[in-house]
Image (cartoon, rainbow, N blue to C red; front, side, top):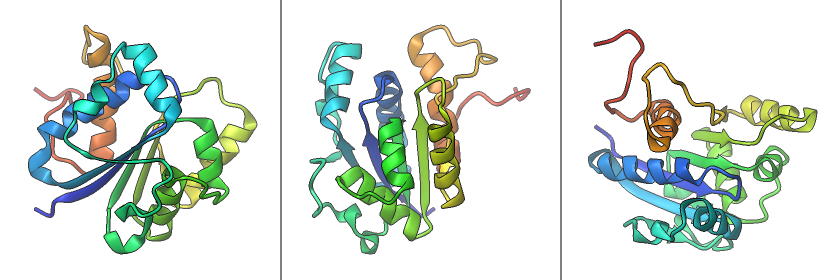
Length: 188
C-alpha cells in the first residue's frame, strides 16, 4: 500500500469539531500515512478555542506550518503531497482558490494540488449558499476539486456531537482513499 502525504488546511469557518474528529481519525490511520502537513489560519485557531474551549490542536504530532510559510514542502508540486483536505473550508478561502489567488499557504497549496491533478476536498460549512458561493463551488469542481459540504447523516444513529461530525469526516476520508471502518448503509 502506498502511504499518503496529506495536507490538512483549517480555516476560520465554524465547525472545529470536524477538524478535531479528522485529526483523531488521522492518528488512527497513521499506518496509511507518510506525512501530515497542517496549516491553520489565525481565525481557525480562534474558532477552535471558542467552540471547543481549548488549544488541543497543539497536542497533535503533525507537521504544522504558518499560514504564510511558502517554504512548506506542499507549497510546491515537487513534494508530491497527494491529498488536501480543507476542514472546514470558509467561503472566503473557497473563493480565493476558485480564482487562483494564492495569497497564503492554504490557497497556494490548493492551487498546487489542483494544477498537479491531485485530490482536493473542501468541506464547506456555511449555509445558506449565495450564487457567488455556488459559482465558486462549480469552478473548483470543474478544476478537479471535490466539494463535500459538512452535512452530517443520521442513519448511523449518532449519539454525540463527535459522532455526528464523524459521519462527515468518514465520508471525507473515504473520498481521500483511506481504508477505514465506518458505518456503511445496509451492511452488517
